[in-house]
Image 1 (cartoon, rainbow, N blue to C red):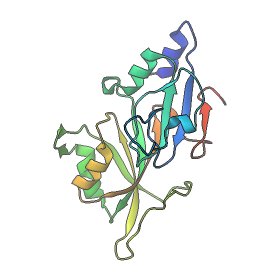
Image 2 (tube, rainbow, N blue to C red):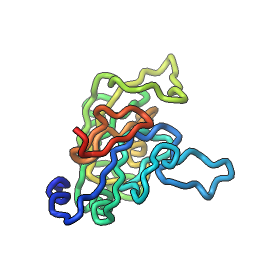
Image 3 (cartoon, rainbow, N blue to C red):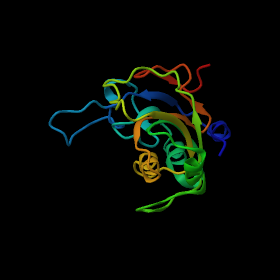
Image 4 (cartoon, rainbow, N blue to C red):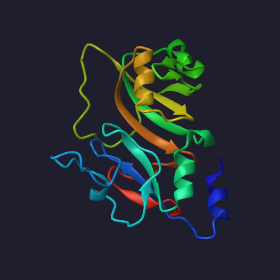
Length: 195
């Protein structure tokens, strides 16, 4: 799906915000269910009328797209539009190409089979420090995998890596469609059309 073409067809230009969600922040603007008032998007984004197009778990980090255009929001979030999402995933253990081939072929989770994913080992990316830091075990190695999917089930990446025997230690969504985290520090946001 070419979101730029869609944006160009709208009579009123939609506002699109790219936000680098920190670990521990809810991907919503309020937290009415918790008496402790967990951190939400409202602590970082003071722009009226924008809403998240999709979610990231509280313990995941990275790119969230927010917009004031309801149709665009639905297009981004709906898996039928096949908007791909790329994640940088730190896993416990040392997966081989044979292990990653299982993700490429699709694995069967409790809620059914996944679509095929792109998966490859990568060097450790240059990311911000996470607060709190990831817990490491000296006796178990860790590695980074780049995984791209075209669907978005609840905790899907974590469940996929666990399914092949490599639990996720850190999960950072780097890309949604053509939008990336380039030049966006953790806890910061920018308008998508800013060069």
